[in-house]
Image (tube, rainbow, N blue to C red):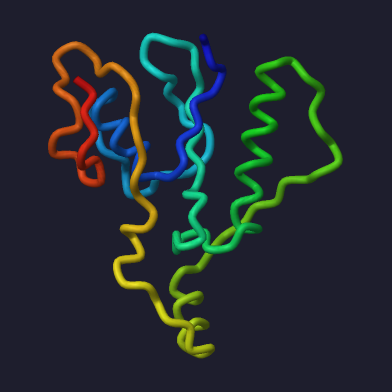
Length: 147
């Protein structure tokens, strides 16, 4: 089986993958979407989605995430040689977390404790590169073992 795209559901699991397979953590200015690298030893493209959890603060609403599903579909169609879908236009979207927190205070919406923790958690099923001993010490990868 040779998938064209590996889609990661959330930045945390991709960060764990990147630490193991590329030997580096994600940068502070990380951008969701298609990544420059491919899965090592393959031509499989890497696409990182925001977590699908509604509790993930960076993109709390489903409509905030739609653009990423459209981009993933466009990449899939491009790799399959299919004609581009012209019915839906992509728009740039920005999310001001500070403004959202202020708005939530105004409407008295409770903030979840440890909301960052709700955006993590995943399972990795792959072989690490030679010399790498699994995910020991990678935050959010408790119980994961790639040996």
